[in-house]
Image 1 (cartoon, one colour):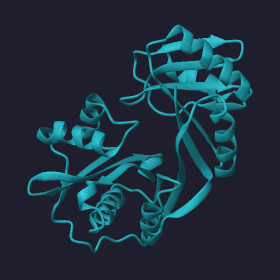
Image 2 (cartoon, rainbow, N blue to C red; image 1 turned 90 degrees about the vertical axis):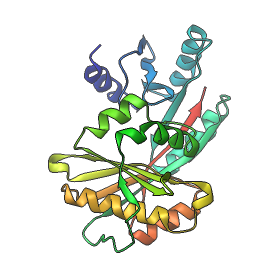
Image 3 (cartoon, helix red, strand yellow; image 1 turned 60 degrees about the vertical axis):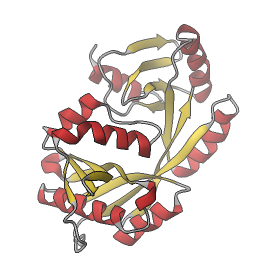
Image 4 (cartoon, rainbow, N blue to C red; image 1 turned 120 degrees about the vertical axis):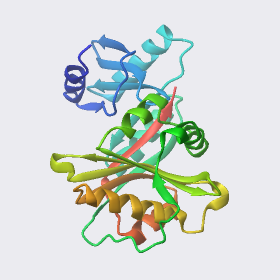
Length: 255
């Protein structure tokens, strides 16, 4: 299966969500309504899709559900913030509840400096992989990184994976992906701190340390996703220098 060709076909439709690296064990569906790919993009089964209108997405999901009655999967809708809010209401009427709306934030790294104490922050080591995976599932309830993905990214110069340790235990983590020509851009995939350690500045230290490492590798701009209703996190990002981009938003639905 040539994923690049499938993704390009998916992008050609008026409405689509074909993002994320699909693992090899996946199913391709080609209906008159559109093209669909069901498989793992993370620990979750996800349906990537391309259709000409949302009603075609609804009918196609029903077909795929009937063929896979024992499989739970997610699908996502992405567009501008206003469009996502509108479409979430429509999709909710189908019986699929949106988990949370995520919005995009971006910033240039020109004036980003790390003057915080980062002595407890280090690159993830192989012997800490299993602890990291448990911590990741504790923090996030969807799109969790797999062990294979994590192991591969440890050997990849395009990824920065840092952990914050306290008493030799992971209490915070951040994953940053570098992309574009000469690693000019970076994307904060996940950042989080243990619930009992929040409010102590650890998240800010992780972000600034991660961006500092990204700058060393050539990054000039950073982007991230955050829950629209997560006011505490949004305020933190804005204090660091991130600006809301209302042209970038998405919502996850569970089937």
